[in-house]
Length: 380
Image (cartoon, rainbow, N blue to C red; front, side, top):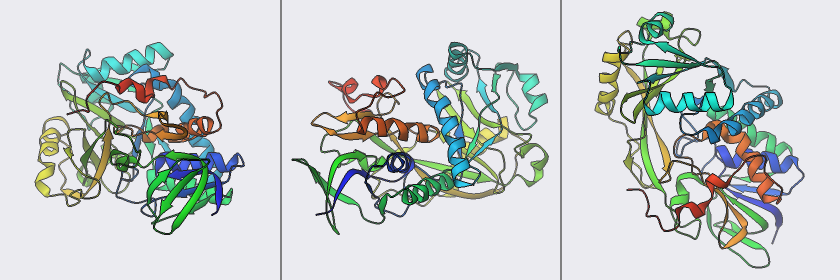
């Protein structure tokens, strides 16, 4: 039986970055994925992802995303491909709402540059948006767009060049402990010293050999034609944005990167099984977004051009899971990210490598420990 230092189960955002980091550290790495990444069946796709620094969810994420910015630029340099497009970011909503107040708290706690713009100034600077008089915009200059498929493909290519063995369309069926850990697939058994389980939505099944408080949601993404508003939807004129249109209800979007303006509701997707998720998106599923466009982005009147399904793997509190397995510390559980994790991927890959090598991590990972859910039921 072939032996490796580290086995990685799942080669999406987190798994690909961990494979690259560990291979470059000289570890013998074998990685598995049930599909051929990058692919459209999980979370690491959709042509664009937001990166933002004034993190409304909690200030604890700011040091992690700051490190991620550095690592994204390193990956760009090493791959020779553009991965991060700065556009700035606008958080729109009530001044005391979850979104704007949370982003402001993170910015002030970490000394990040930002501006709070009144509704009229938002309309003047970014004519695509029509906020109401009770709304403001928090502007952060370093936010922008990441390209997920290119990023995952680049990380995997570089990991292979560094010596990692990557096996696609070969799901891990089970694993067991002992003197070493055995990973079982339909093609054979693999002996590894340590394991990273980074299988995204498939972590909600039995892969972890422990019940995890996870819920998988089917999220729909839409691209609208913006030809009639091209002068105000180009990346030079339209930033990435998140908009809290009702208490704790948000939609987000991107400038036109060549295929239309991409918009989506944040969370609110139906529960699903990743193995049987409904992949067809019906036109009426965009109706809620059409209503939001009509009232808040009226210059965007174009037809729906395309749509797709993305999976959010949600924890009850919306924070990540980055921790050693309670039953076997050689196994690391890696980041079901509740729909906001991609931006952190290269920094999380670095942290996972430190966990595997039993080195101190550069970040406080205590908020992401599994023990915080002890005695708590799964999210409804």
